[in-house]
Image (cartoon, each protein chain N blue to C red):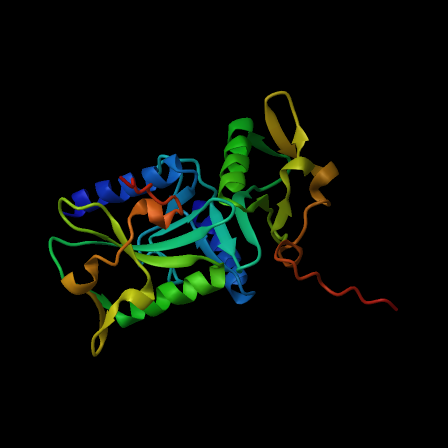
Length: 133
Length: 133
């Protein structure tokens, strides 16, 4: 599962580069003294910070502190921040913090809000063309 | 020497955070498929990419490919790029690519141009106040 996760993360990094973003995976948490997101990407106009999560099913719970850290880093650095969620047989979906459900001590992405997540093309500002017929 | 280098890099990261920049050290080269600089920092207005070098003495030689990679990443990401050089008993000094000397197949920082390097306060846009008496 760990290895699979890493492959999906690499795919995500690769897709960002393919679409004109310089993207990096940061060193694993615990190896750095400051809270940093998993991925930082920029294309000279838009800067993005992503915390990535891979789960076998919904809901996804996220610790409040992790959301605070992500928001703090992104605000200081100057980046829009997202939670990236990868479910089996689904593409990555990205959620803004204000889209998450708040529970007593955590944040949550469940089936109610999963459809609100944007895909990578929306994330990087290339909206897929909708065919009107 | 390796360990010392790491300490000086951590100090640099720490100083960036202290001065309002969110800064990260990227994973070591070789662990990533794309060329990335050693440090990326941002404060919402200014984005900086740094390739760090620690040497016991001058001159410092840098491979042409490494300079190209740094320039490419920074241009795509949207960051100013610098070579950060740490010499023993000296503070970090930062050099723009166009300040480096070009040799046949490498770039060089020698005693002639070392004084052109800016310090961390100039790097982050806080010029030290010069007292006029």
